Length: 275
Image (cartoon, rainbow, N blue to C red; front, side, top):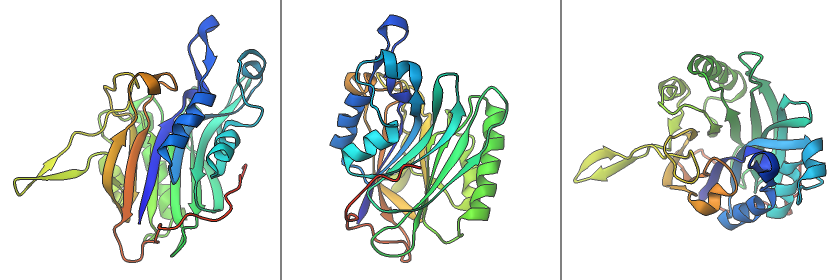
């Protein structure tokens, strides 16, 4: 009855600089397999990079979302956020459940940062569709405020008010300032769940995800509407630090409303949906 959800900035499947640069995408594939996720919200996914394809050993021939989705036996959806000199990258969603629809919405705030929302509807075994939005917001506080406002406008226009919804990704919001805005659409930060202590509610500190070797700041978040977190986790330490500069944020989510779809049975015959 629970969804195993991960949000992960994979740093384009590359770590290091100059002569020490290496492809981490193969090891990242194995690490994600071990998590056995139902939904993976991915940021900085490389669709193509001509230079890396020629210079880095182990670079896959397929776009990274296809490569990861096929290895994990999951459906995959992707849209480009940024086009660079040698390639393009963006957000992706891997899903154990069939993908019904894929949309993209540009939320770039200035010419130095290309950002977008990936909106994917997945069909759970029972009930209506689950709406999933993958985000990667900007580095500047003012940009993040405006991008949050555009996210809220998008949800109001494209997601039914009673629909179950997950919004996850790299918000770059280490101060937690956009959480009150997202409450306008009923989105709760499950990265900061309440705990019961001596009959009173105590608040756990929000999970820190960056840098992966020793996480100090909470850049990555999972917000949900119609679902509650029964478990929050983090993949961090030396092993994960060899894969990306971010640690993956993990959550077990359970339907909180009677009309929320049941997620008990995996979809049959997963296949890639390369968007």
